[in-house]
Amino acid sequence: MNDILQAEKDFSIDTIPEPENIEDVIFSLMVNPNLSSINYFNDFSEVNISPDSIGDSDNDETGLFELDSNGTSMAMTTHAFHHHLQNDPQKATEILISRAARKMLCFGASPTAISAFLYHINFGDPKGQFIASGAKRGLENAAKKFNLKISDRKIRFDHFSKHGPVFPTIIISMMSLVHNQEKITTHTFKRKGNNIFLIGRSIDDIGSSEYLEFYHGVSDSPLPAFDINVEIEIQSALKKLHKRDLIRSASPIGKGGLFFTLLRAAIPNDLGFDIITDAEIRIDSFLFGEAMGRILVDVDLENEDDFMDLLTEMNIPFFTLGHVTKGEIRIDDTSFGFIDKMTAGV
Image (cartoon, rainbow, N blue to C red; front, side):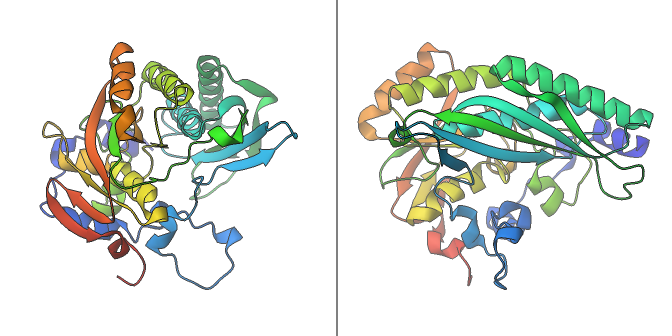
């Protein structure tokens, strides 16, 4: 445990070489099952996991349930996290809840309530008590920041005195209200030519990313960059963008970083993207880092000025990435082929 904590403290992005060939990274990560949305328990076929599943759902795994005949619905999402729960349970819990809230707001839903479950915890042990108390603080702080109601028992426990190699894990479920299903914003690009923007600030950070662990084999690294107050600002801007109907799609930057978020947005409608990376940020951080507080959106050409004006007025950083293509994937003027190259059979 102490060795892991020390390794995380000693970690520096400067020890990780920048990849010489981005295409090698992409196709190495394509076989990572954590970047596929396949749910084994809901798919009993014998078909192997394929990259097709990265973008096979129009609502990106968010459940939607109609509550009444007036158009009011409930959206629900469930997230789990085990990284650093033993070292910094408060921050890890706040990150998990922030991810869920950002996802719900991208969808156009209003986060309302949350429940939490700690799995493989021995709360009779001081380490278990440390995790439980830290997770409780994180849950309460995030709920206050995001104005969420918490289930009566706050955190439920699954007690294990000897959980062996299984890491303690926190699982949260977030419920949100959707007042008008016609106003739902999905994660998928809708048409060629729309401009693509990244809301939020990119930094040189690859901590706890799928890229760092799967491609470089580094499992002990800090949590991704995170500031809960920045999350509040970004999510407040997102609400206004929805209210003014200025965005066509919205996706939180999640597993796999910006590149795989772009891929999940492009695949369903057989579209592509042509983007330029930030020259001030390492290309692997920019494309594959999983720092918090960032949202991918596409915007109709006629709404571009209003979109940029609103974010500028709110002092929200954003970056112009490029535009949606008919199917080609281009990064920094280099073609990576067409979207069908990213599907099974390659």
